Image (cartoon, rainbow, N blue to C red; front, side, top):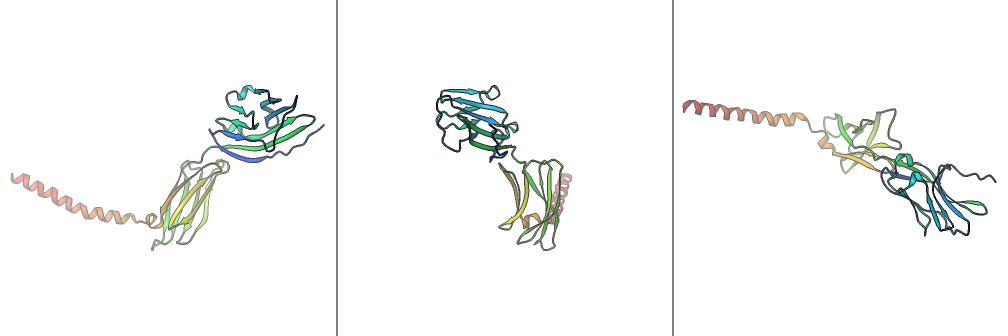
Length: 227
């Protein structure tokens, strides 16, 4: 007999290093000589259960895979990117029946992000910002006013984290740069008025302080000379 199965199962995304629980999608009752097998990519056996009595874990999954005798679910510990694939649970009886099917993708968490100012309007109501990841794999330019942010373009490296996206939006007067994928997210939040603070303002305050400091030093020098 030839059995044809879909190459895709229920999508599951999991962060690198986490544990993953895959459950059967319909009740399983094993009769005499029936075998339940969890397999990845239809080529590698993960674990096998014979008539609810004997559990056999493949050598490559020793100490990393556990099968529940009660629910027949599969627990994978400390998953890595190499564990991505299509996992199927099948019962071999008079005919083979698929009782679970998952398309598993293991992803690293995304890197942090930062907002930098490219241009500010004279009245500080409009700002053009560059939102970039800390690893510089993704950067995009956005112009924001008091209502919304619009994308002006950006540069992407040829190789980026699969499934990652970079978005900029406004919330309560703050510009938010958000880097995310299916398992994690990071963000940088800054108010528009803070982004448009002119550096001359801080320099002016420093210039006001400098003459006072000089006067104090000169006065102290005169006193020393008199003494």
